[in-house]
Length: 80
Image (cartoon, rainbow, N blue to C red; front, side, top):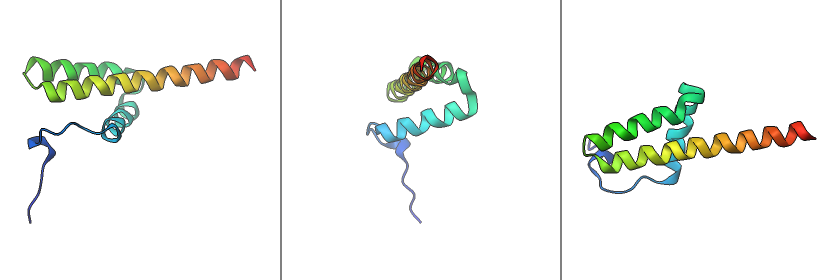
């Protein structure tokens, strides 16, 4: 059976894939999820893996955007 791997592909990751990565990090690391993603990003960039470094940086951004949205909603409901 032939198995294809995205690790050998130069294709950029989709927003759905990045969102799934963010969701897993949030589930495993809670409020530290963005920092964990930043760590992975820095590690890959320092090891000359720009594609993965950029992907993890985008995951960190997604986590922060979700957190800001959740905080905004909680403040809105608190004011009601």
